[in-house]
Image 1 (spheres, rainbow, N blue to C red):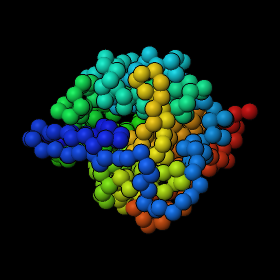
Image 2: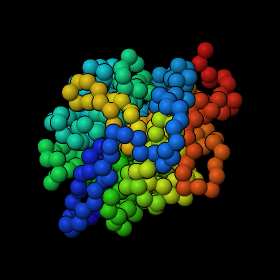
Image 3: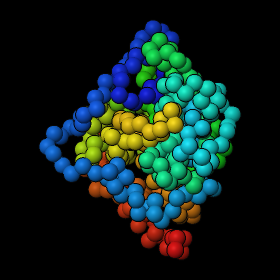
Image 4: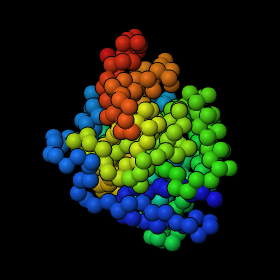
Length: 334
């Protein structure tokens, strides 16, 4: 049965499937690994995708529910003291039982990027929104033998559960590792359900450094997210494809700071940490323009000039905001 990758951090970790096969994520050093080596202007991750003016306009709306399908979250972190993290039924607890587990570390990092207090070193992109924490990865103390994983079918169940619980946007900082037709058909059906219900899905392109798509990233409703460095150049380890270039965006995937499970902050990289920038932008846009349809919000994110390439354009949150404000001027904050 197929498994899903869930950690796009700085180590190369091996995952085992039920048939004894394995796959690994590429090792990532602390130095830049962009496709282009010429120096450029290094920018703050938020500034790179023009999120600050949108974050000044709104911090989010509690009525906008954001689904986080990832690992459990260390809710005792002081920078999550005001976060609206809802407990939901899931195969795993939403709170960490083992703070040192890879699942807890990853889930806490991703949640912190979206929900951390405004005075945190973490981006805290849309802290006033409500977050549906749906852990899909079970915790383990092992660093290799029993790394957290989940099947495409289990991911499909969590997507449907998030939608039924009222999520408007779902963050998938995961990627398919081993395809399996039956489970992937169920996953495609769950993504079709998101389309019918008008729930946007932002998903990691993956970090295998390959050209090719998966049932997630090639689904026409999904917004695939490629990681870029601090100059906006795509990271070597990101996956690319024609569908990713056509319907996705790039977002910061290098030197991103968020919450750690020791109550402090840490820095990570990869497409997993790129996705929350897109998810957060969507949540803010819907918070400010609640009458906008899902198609309109998605259209706003796709305004950048698109060439026939496997590399998607950089997210421009402020351009998306201005696009929607021209359509819904009466709903703008004053």
